[in-house]
Length: 106
Length: 338
Image 1 (cartoon, each protein chain N blue to C red):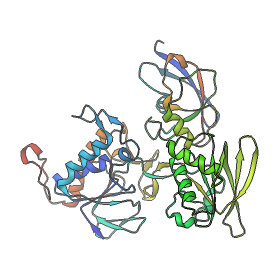
Image 2 (cartoon, helix red, strand yellow):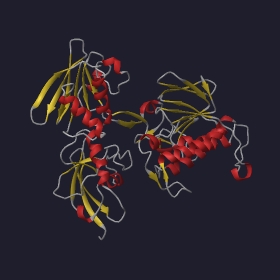
Image 3 (spheres, rainbow over the protein chains, first blue to last red):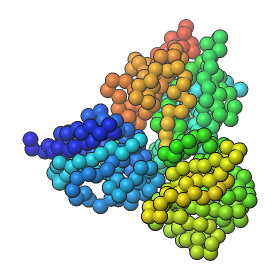
Image 4 (cartoon, rainbow over the protein chains, first blue to last red):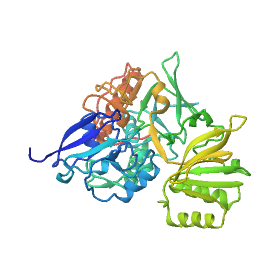
């Protein structure tokens, strides 16, 4: 379908979920996960202020540079790895079709 | 003991506006908040962020909105207990509630409205096994009195402003005997002058700066107090460092807090309410704003204003069961304060 991509989210039990996500709704990964009722809290509402949507990028997809706000938050978060990202800062665009992300531990 | 008509728990935007709607019904309010000033998330998390969905304001900064709400409710003279966290909710035999804070302040009213937003802001705790076992035995998440560390060995971990500022303070004032700052990365994101000061203190051997490393374990001394921490370095492996105190400073995170134990029906970390009047499963206790949940719930300030407005109507009916209440427009009657 036009304006639809697929994102793959591996939950904390290791189960993979292939989710359809619209590119024309100004959504991000945190919001897509919440809309499918995956266990992502998104406490701060997407302002890169809580790290409850932290995930690990596990596919070879080039994402835009992380903002200072995202890097600052990841500095204070736990379970952070080289490939850590905040789901709320990843926009749903055609460029990330097929992305694989693993939810970080709570 | 504070006596009022409505105890509002949470002084965020929704709690504040509820004071206004209660005031129109001649009900007095007392607000309790764990933060030191009113405004909730808007002041604590994003005071400078613009908000675009407040009716009548094409754009308003979060901090400015709180200022406007305070101005709007001033006429109803709300009272505040700030910097204290609610702990206990008791019910008296004559249908009153007593809310007690962590500092022992007691408040009594026939109605309680919980407008607690995300909950209470608590320190973020690193995932270290047995960490909680050492609380009050050498692990502290907040520095309340720096003198407590006089002559002690201290390990601070974290990379934000509070880790940097306390490291500098304890070192420059020569309070702690030995200070180590452990940070996961080599660079810091705090204020540039703080970062520079920490680098200078490390260069002068006033502190020990351990970067690319994390505290991953705690070891006890013979009294069961913190005796050392295990520091895992990215390339050098694990090392035990002797210390008297371990202070992880990783900012604050919200949690429902003691409200979770008040016998209210909860769902997904929120308080379930009846949308007729936003009442909880306990008669006389209401929940409005981000802390409640119901089918179709939207966590918007706008919706919280509506919820608080309806809740005070039901509060009035509980407080004055024999009085008739008619909706009056402010355009007709104006606003008559206390």
